[in-house]
Amino acid sequence: MEIVINDTPEIASILASDIVEHALTAVEGLVLGLATGSTPLAMYRELIRRHVESGLSFITARAFLLDEYVGLPNDHPEAYRQFIAREFTDHIDLPTNGLRSPDGAADDLAAAAQDYEQAIADAGGVDVQILGIGSDGHIGFNEPSSSLGSRTRLKTLTNKTRIDNARFFEDDIGKVPRHCMTQGIATILEARHLVLLAFGEAKARPLALAVEGPITAMIPASALQLHPHVTVLVDDAAASELSNADYYRETFEHKPRWQTF
Ligand code: F6R
Image (cartoon, helix red, strand yellow):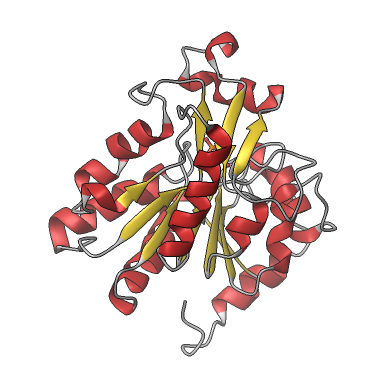
């Protein structure tokens, strides 16, 4: 696991964008895994900038969202499919049919979850998966106690997550759905490169538990320790509880050229 501590979220987001840009040029038909929420927004803005100003193209890429609310109509502005279109994919040249998301409004949700797993497999798996971390240690919407072997399925959101996300719903927790469909932890771990972003003090504790604590279903992000290729890009505030921070800084400072992405 490579942990890179940056002065600001903007610098970390540039490094994350470099990873995506490099993958777009290295892999024909790149499959991107996209997270929603606030954390990746600066990275999405940077990628849009590179698309507009330097012609970075997503025309042959495909993208899969990590998760979706259940109980919101597909056209609700806070449905994650709408969110990602508004914040990212409407502003680049990703083909419209190149974006897939779990169907949280399906009549048969269990079948929709299986279809989603199949769609990811049919695409050849995810090459680069962008992840945020919840204040309770979740990745995707795999809340504490999620099986580390889980696949795409329905989950119940914790009240902590609903409170955290109420800011997207006029600060009214009553409007935040209780349920979601999320890629499972085993699904996420099959992506070839995981890029975890974490910014701000509120992420310091869950981040430290995830990368330096024991692997446990109570901190779902700790499952990343099992993956052979993880890049963790954080700002100083999110790094403030890492006990090995000096080592991570020194390692990055002396990173050899051969150890690129
Ligand atoms: C969103 C997702 C979640 C968020 C996490 C952090 O698709 O999968 O795991 O990444 O809840 O959210 P923010 O970035 O809003 O703090």
